[in-house]
Length: 322
Image 1 (spheres, rainbow, N blue to C red):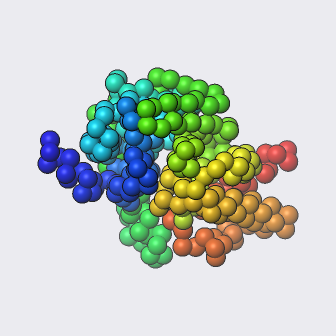
Image 2 (cartoon, rainbow, N blue to C red; image 1 turned 135 degrees about the vertical axis):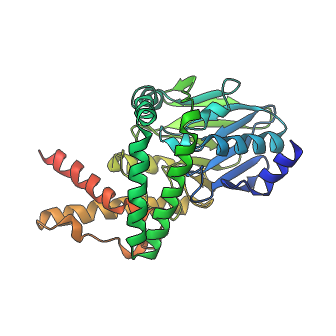
Image 3 (tube, rainbow, N blue to C red; image 1 turned 90 degrees about the vertical axis):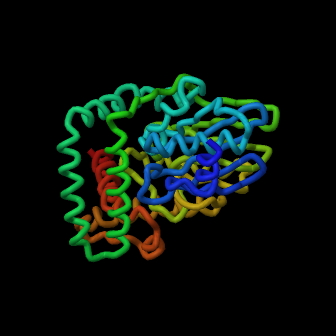
């Protein structure tokens, strides 16, 4: 067990640990592994809280090992900031001892769409693996080096997920809330807050007021393009405006390095810029294919999502005008 702990602290293949404050650690995802998104470990004093649980069982197990060693306590709480698999699929590692917490809406999505999707994947993994093989062929033909690298990371993460799929026990939250939940430990308190849905239909974040730290899930990303697949961009902007009013100095984002409020502004600017580009293109009867990544974001990761982000904004815009 000691060797396992030391290996994890020296660097799980899935994440790198960064101390953010006394008793607060960011587990920053290593691209192309079974984590995909970031997680956080928070020492409450008499108990331990985890924010998000990664994509694979192995990544979550490493997170649990690190958390118990760093805090000296077993994990009592796991917060799912939203329903996406890179934030929820590791839940089973912490159940049933830990309370798994999400918004009511997030749990409902997981209990319906999420469970159905897992069932479909289990029924026909051959088709999924065939699609992954096709992606591998496309990667070999890709000439954009940055895009090719990101496609390789995504493919590697998808293959990690497919390896654990037969052992995956899709584990739902056991406690839900609709606005705010406060958890008080002997060392610190945390506020689990939702202002509604921006990145997904329902997004929560964890706020440590005394430490001036927020663990934002995918509402805030650092040097990564926000993902619009399930988004409401206008509401996302409204949510970030409210977050700006909180006394925050340090942010653990859903993807990317530990950052500050500056990255909130960058995400807001990205959303506004994409919305404006699409609106201008529609007004000129132009083609979405001619919209390219603005210079300010060309070095950001998640470039594979740019085209789908543009399409999502277009779909919302045309739906609104009907």
